[in-house]
Image (cartoon, rainbow, N blue to C red; front, side, top):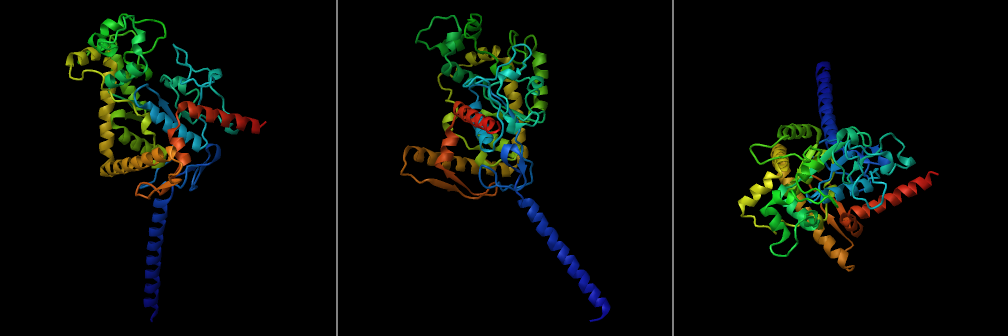
Length: 411
């Protein structure tokens, strides 16, 4: 072989070797697991993490662990809250708790929205970094300036909205809101029906004891200034209506995600993708879902119109973010739809297994969720079932026990 042929052969070998190397490196990058939490919230590249094997992503993403949930009662927030608390506990994050055990909300100043240091549990020494609060999922009214004083400024803000009339019915029945009004109680017709027949009449007779929100409650939780203002029916809002519209536009820029209860499973898969979590992280107990809104006459349009008249801000808020949510889902493409269907099959499998194993100790000790294009294989155990079924007050106790133990261990 002459010298020119030898040089050409060497050159071709180098080209092929380089091409093979690049292909291998590309595969390594694509299959690289997302960053999983180590102890005390530290990020560890490529580790399996506290919740099991690492996720198998379809594309590279950055794990998010700092999140604030603005909790709105009867909107499906209990499902999201349980997911966040479980994620925080299993990944050894610091979750913000009120100083008083069992309190479902974080105390705030009624005017400024500020949260006093003495009203929230302080991180133990193991969380010595500045602003170490990773997750806030207890009830708190949205005020970004006030919340930035106790959570990281790069925290992701999320909330979940529900059709205003359905949300109100659930809250009215479960919280006995008829007790908020100076109206004679009688079984026939039920208090809910009487309220919806004349909501403005009832609202004028509000009692000031045991005060609880009954109008524009989603808007109020998100900090929209609606108290005492006439947020009228569409298309014309009452006084302050322009301010509400402007505020909603601000919320759109400040919230990472606004989930929709009527599209709960789509919402959770969207949350998973945004936070770079796994399907295992967004499993939930179907028993936490809101009861169906079926105790009113849904065919009576006049009642709907009257309700909308005193809840104009909530309707604006809900339909604004419902449209945004649909656009986000559409932008995810067909792959998102397939992942949602897969997630629903997994959720059904896990729910059936947990229902059987919790009540029957003769049932299998575990079940396997096989690998998919969106996730690695993982095992569901009895312990995991109990974790999925825990509610806020259960997690509250576990977090306090952990923080107390960590504090004692550093003394």
